Image 1 (cartoon, protein in one colour):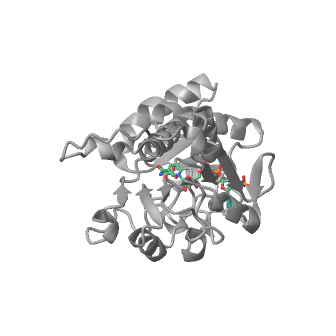
Image 2 (cartoon, rainbow, N blue to C red):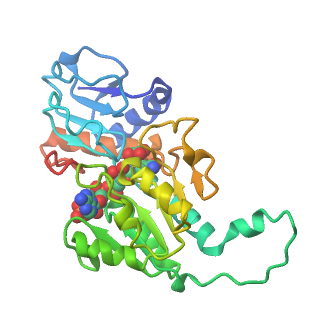
Length: 304
Ligand code: NDP
Ligand code: OXD
């Protein structure tokens, strides 16, 4: 059985080492290669940025296993008729929790005032407690739910919002308005779909309390950039820490780079790490081989 990696060549050494190990642990015998004729390929391990965009020739392939959690670049690909699984991986989740909690605490504690204090001002104002700083987490999936749990463990009152109804979580337009109206910090962990594009538009940004902070490690298109800049310029939004953008790398002349109320991080919130992702992939290949249902199947109609 043959598994091919379609991803940046720089990833090959790690996956060449980790995937065979993980497959052996899962009790699966498979060859892992970086190139093979389409007619011999059983599984494709896939980065959506890969040059492979036409899957027509892969008749034998049983599944495409994405290395990314977000699959918006591939979900609408009509040549891909096999099951598509996305990445849900403890390593990815751990990274995202650390990024979200770190940036939330930066703003919550007002750390910047003390880190950059050229006038050596002795300002003894104490920061509030987390219990006084409500957070809205938009998107309560694998990553959002873990971030919400970590923030709750620090005593932040967290309101979650998702597409479907779930216990302890808001949904729908009314739920979104309610979540935004009280949020001092908003975390965006939604996939990019036609429904979520420009979710944070001018009207919804206006619902936020004065000075609220936005953390976006989800996807750039979730926010209307122009509306965000206007809200930042007006001081209505206090700060935006953005990890993802409509165009990546963020173009050098984009106003986000120089805006005093924007922090840009270069899509590094959470990485797919080969040593843990390989186990997720191997488990799905094992399932494919034994006829068990795949984990983390993408729902093409839903878009995530
Ligand atoms: P999941 O699919 O597990 O969760 C998505 C969540 O978004 C679900 O709670 C879902 O609701 C909700 N959602 C989807 N559409 C809507 C909608 N129209 N209205 C309201 N809620 C909606 O994804 P993950 O948590 O694994 O990942 C989230 C995103 O994070 C990825 O799609 C990717 O874009 C981004 N990401 C970014 C990384 C980075 O380094 N910056 C790294 C990894 C991921 P429901 O539960 O009802 O289905
Ligand atoms: C992902 C990402 O979707 O890195 O996994 O953004």
